[in-house]
Image 1: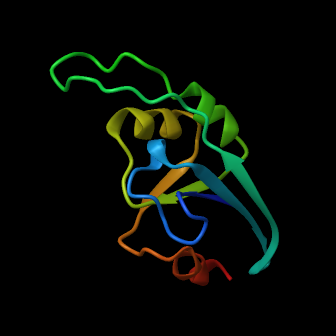
Image 2: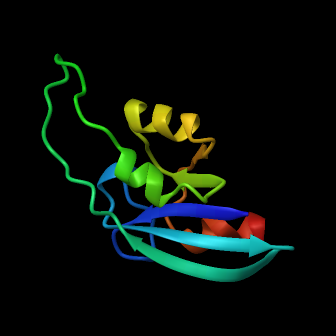
Length: 107
């Protein structure tokens, strides 16, 4: 299983998944962490008015996460969430802050 976690400091979960500096990718097999990758989030962010249609794609982030099974995050926007679902990447929302706490149930 590969789990993606958005982070700005590599220790805690980012408040907003699409605006995180990095996605930390954890490969877990038989309750053991076998690989960790850090992928920079180069997605360009822009301000958009809630009254107009969301006009950009998250395709760059979806491609970066395409081999992941699950993303654990504090918050995901509705458009990014739909694109993750379409890519068969499950999303789990958590209130936990530390990445180590989020990973404990999988290890």
